[in-house]
Amino acid sequence: RERLEAAYLAELRAFDELNTANCALQREDKFERRTSCMMPRGRRGQKSKALTNWAVARAAADEADEAVGEASALVLDGIEAGTSRALMAVGFRPSKILVPNIVPKVAEALRDMGIAAWAGRLEAYLDQPAPRRFCLVYLDHTGAFPRRAGQLRELFQGGFVGPGSVVACTFSTRHAP
Image 1 (cartoon, rainbow, N blue to C red):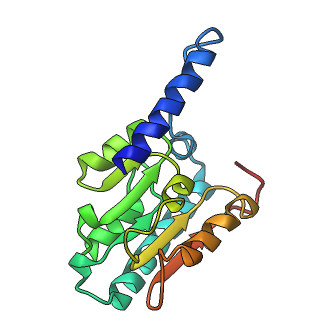
Image 2 (spheres, rainbow, N blue to C red; image 1 turned 30 degrees about the vertical axis):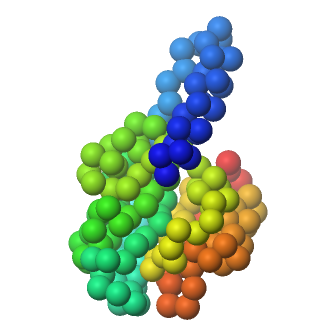
Image 3 (cartoon, rainbow, N blue to C red; image 1 turned 180 degrees about the vertical axis):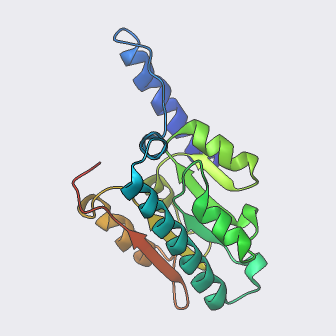
């Protein structure tokens, strides 16, 4: 993960150097910005998201081949760590919850919680040989499915999941990155 993060951060620095002439670029979590000023409908969505996180965590704990504290998970999570917190609540150790995030400050905040997070893209992680079979993979995407179909294929073909693994995904119905 450290090598993946170093490569990702080097790419970000190179990109930032190209853009410094235009403006000061500040990286932020777009999802966090959207949820900070939610309307009532968005708040209802957050309640549904919390229930989904709990249900996914419970299913993973129920299906774990080993003790839940030894089971590992690969999830997409934001600075609020809703999925990671739900997993910890059912017994997953933070160090066994792997979380890539494209926003360096989010990855850092998750690491401060003891979560095995790094700044980088899920695709780069899936391009590596599978270090283990995950008990849970939860790809909680904020965008549409078509650009992410290859991630699901790679989970199975690359050996990241197998019999007994829980695979959960969410996608948006709108077109998004």
